[in-house]
Length: 279
Image (cartoon, rainbow, N blue to C red; front, top):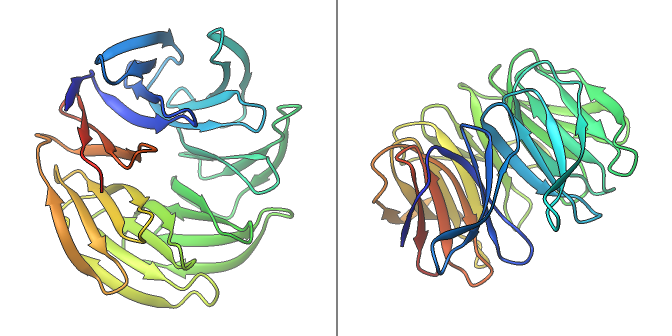
């Protein structure tokens, strides 16, 4: 299935299985996938929407190139508040183990926000270039990847860098496998697996020919990667084996997300959202 959506930079799967898209024009759309119709359409930002996450209280947070994080009550389409502080595009937002919100930005910082008071609790300043990606380990540690070609593992409770992993290219995406190994995707299409405990590089696989924009880990442990080379690839990442390549997008794939039934959604620079059968 394919849905026309102008410049859907990011997509997000709500806990109720509803698909949300954010566009380069700052539009936030909630989709009825079966009918291929938009249920709710909001002007959410004055720039491209890059990330979403659901707060512990059920509100939806959105982050964008207007340097802002907005908090929404999606039941009545009302904006609750705006989190200001970043001085560059906000690339990724996510919830930490203690319920705080973390945000990474082109201003080289990561900010930690209290999701009850919406106050900035802490600013992490160890990077010297754009922080394109963040993820969270099972022990609660925050992992960040930057255009300075490093990955940092932080103790999110005190902002101390526990470990720095050196790479050879910009880090564009991160995720954590079921065995707690860390996965990074770089500017030139290389996927690297890291031991998140000792920081050792375990494996490097090359299948994409352009930057890796997004990862999804399947219930069986397989890894799905999306790239600006127009493809989506499925890997048995335990042995570095490419199992399947999905083609159909005619420009770069920006983001992928998994439906509760196992279907995969992908958004592309070709102005489409595609739905792929169960994996």
